[in-house]
Length: 102
Image (cartoon, rainbow, N blue to C red; front, side, top):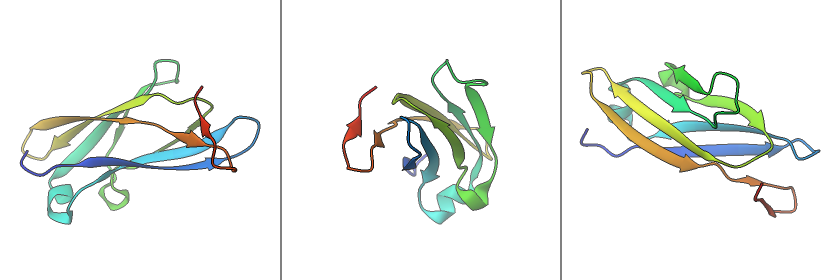
């Protein structure tokens, strides 16, 4: 795959050491149009830790929630059958900006 993709994230602290978060795929529009799906691999303690997202309109966004930080892996599958592996370390912050390191 000639175009580089990047994983981005959002987070929202809910209180009680719990966050809602999301990850999605960034890249130029033409490259994103060539993606068939993204296979996200979460920490093995999550129910169904391997999840596929097919929604191009939302940049293959995965929404979830939890208390800890961990590496999230993505395998990007294109319409021509090729794939690329990416990794992103989920970061979570408290409302005061302090980073959760758990």
